Image 1: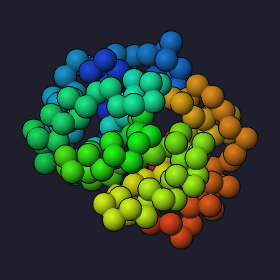
Image 2: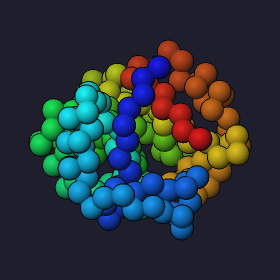
Image 3: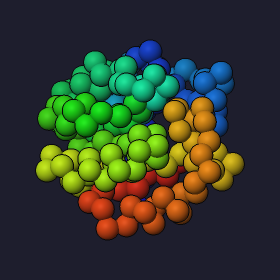
Amino acid sequence: MDILPAIDLIGGKCVRLLQGDYSRQIDYSGDPVGVAREFERLGAKWLHVVDLDGAREGRPCNLPSIRQILTETSLQVEVGGGLREAETIEELIDAGVQRCIVGTKALVDWDWFKELVQRPKCANRVALGLDAKRGQLAVRGWAEQTPQTAVQVAQMAAGLPVSAIIYTD
């Protein structure tokens, strides 16, 4: 098991949502790059970044902060939140993101996800993101629940060239 420090972004700020509830937000810092540098100084090799605006909007919204973390640290960065287009995922990989986390789009369009992870640029660079709320998987930035369980979806991913399964509850 790998444990990674995490930065959740809303409006370019580092935040934490209590149990995925956007109305229960704690602001930590207005300087995500500074937070990333501090994690690196403390010995982190990887950083988990979630674009919470992107998760809700269905498209990345905090790319400037993510790009700045990539250029101003030597951390291996994984990014999730709003990644629902193959082209966007490939652009992030080209920009230096080590691993892109796909959750909602995988759960609502499994055939698309299977095709995505077969693309040469994406094979073993895409992680399956599974967010659970009260035992059921949640999508669209924790806003909706699905009838699927994490175990069911993880079993479906067996044999696919995914780089990891990232489970949050």
